Length: 432
Image 1 (cartoon, helix red, strand yellow):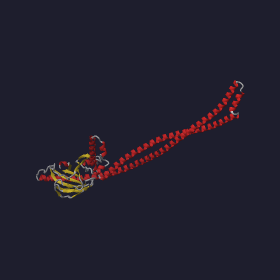
Image 2: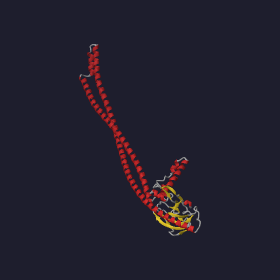
Image 3: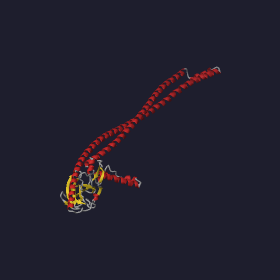
Image 4: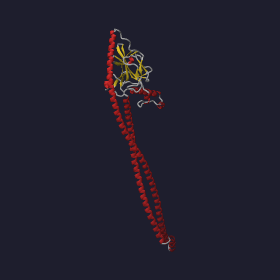
């Protein structure tokens, strides 16, 4: 289809950027904040040139397909962009879940370790309590045994009185010290058991606090992990939804493209018929001129008056790659950006030979100007809101013939102006 369209010399009208373009998602806008951040004037100039190029590209994209195709293409681009964003969000959410899972495993290991330490401390505490109870019983038994034999101090004093020799005295003294040491040792061992028990109780309390802290942290992390998992599930659902949207948008774009291709095929047939008609008119005009034995009237350059005043040339005649369909084709006229309702004027004297509505070019009007500079010349006006003249009408240079409009494949007010010589499109610059 692309090659056929290129061969036919047909191209779609392109308009200057309307107000909507400044907010287009596909057109970068140089924000004031960006300007404030740039310190190098050369960078600002470079960025300004880039923005201007982007705007020019947006102009070329603006009227190169039906509004339905443009909407479908925009929807498809948006769906693809949103799908990409959704995939990034999903990847980020899954990364959070994976990190949280690793942290969860680490926290569980720490909790298990703390719980084991608590269990060990509790076992040691219980063992210390048993030891202390046994130590108390031992002390009680020791003291009871000692005092059942009498008051140790009195017994020691009596032994001193009974001593008959220094050796007896020494022996009795050692016996008294042994009894006293036995009693002291029993008390010391009991005191040590009490101190150890206090240490074990403190260890158990500390271990309980650690376990409680770990459990609280694990509970908080569990809530956080559940939040991440919910976020990941939501992101996954969003990806699935975006996939569906992209599929729907792709199908809509494909259907719109098929409809556009049908319209372009019909236009190709129309253009071929128009070219054949103008070629026959040109041949007749040239034969008539030769029959009158007159020379070619007029010069090509400057022969035609500008078709619309106060307008800007937004897209010139020439070959280019179609911005949506991708084929290399001819933009077969000039696009003049102008407000809807501005008058369109005849470029030269002539006769209206065709006027009809095209799904692509909207309201069209063709004026035959006869033989000019050795060629049969005709002008074509497209996308008008309406025309004031019809087929067969004779028009004069500068006469208002219609008004700028936005019909056909157009999303903004403009005129697509074509010049045809001997039934073939030519660059209007050679005639204006």
